[in-house]
Image (cartoon, rainbow, N blue to C red; front, top):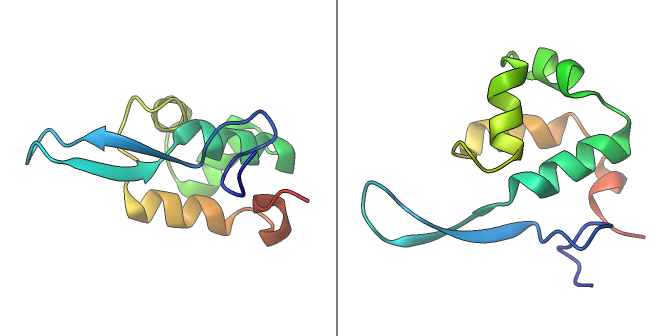
Length: 88
């Protein structure tokens, strides 16, 4: 397991084709975010409340159905304890 993988082997990054430019970009894997939130003991509803997003929207982000925008990812990661993001 690499340093970027979570407990379940979910890689923190994935490549995704951009609908706007057609290029492939490296983006955060929403499943990695979900795994980190669960390890932290936060419910989807609580994280959505903290981020001021609807639970449905956040669920779509975590399941890679919506874009993982830098602002959302940054705010998401700030809600987690730093040590929880690194496998020990």
